[in-house]
Image 1 (tube, one colour):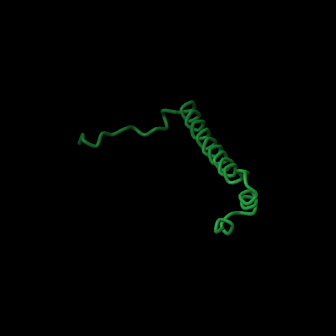
Image 2: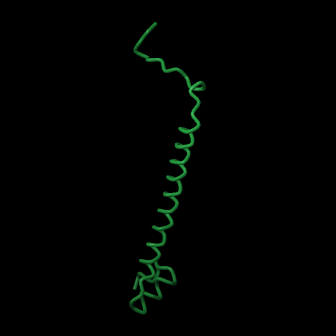
Image 3: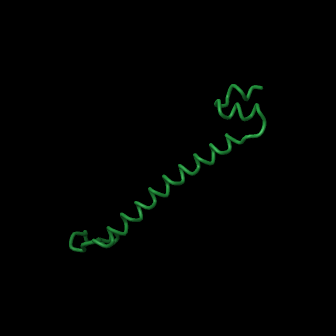
Length: 71
């Protein structure tokens, strides 16, 4: 009986009537939203790295100086 106070109206009605899986489908939907956002971020990170590698100009990079070698 206490679950009725914590659930949204869609989940509460489906729990009272018996059957229905609104809570499960809402969790699945939110999982899909989160995964699509994370895959979009990953795609853009990979794309930026590829473009940076493709348009790399070695004349603009700093020379590496080994810190253990003292002059």
